[in-house]
Amino acid sequence: MSAPRLSEIASLRAAWWAHRALCAARAGLLRGELRTVRIPGPPPLPSSAVRGVEALLRRRSHSCLEGALVRQRWLAAQGEHRDIAIGVMPPSQGFAAHAWLEGDSDPIAERFHELTRVRL
View 1 (cartoon, rainbow, N blue to C red):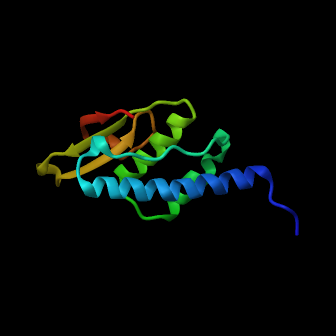
View 2: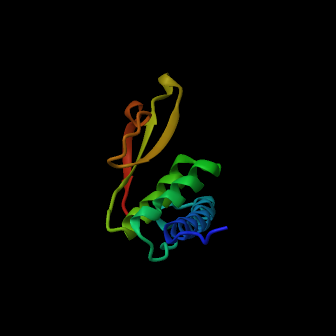
């Protein structure tokens, strides 16, 4: 059995951070005010460790807003600052809300009317 590569260790550390960050996002949103939700910063890791963040988010149940908050914090730590967009569908189209990161290719986002943005 061979020792894990450094990139695998970095991805595992990123996944562990994403787990903790997702818990913080959920707890903060349950307390109320979106703009006061505090996501802990990730440890210093290479940007390639995002694989661990993405893997955790694919496997854990979460809202689109919780996921966007976690991804926004990760990207900010990598020097990429992006807003979270929050939009709704009108009641005549079956009211729904959605959150996504600015600049993502999110085909669902096209159906929503943007209401606000959240900066880190």
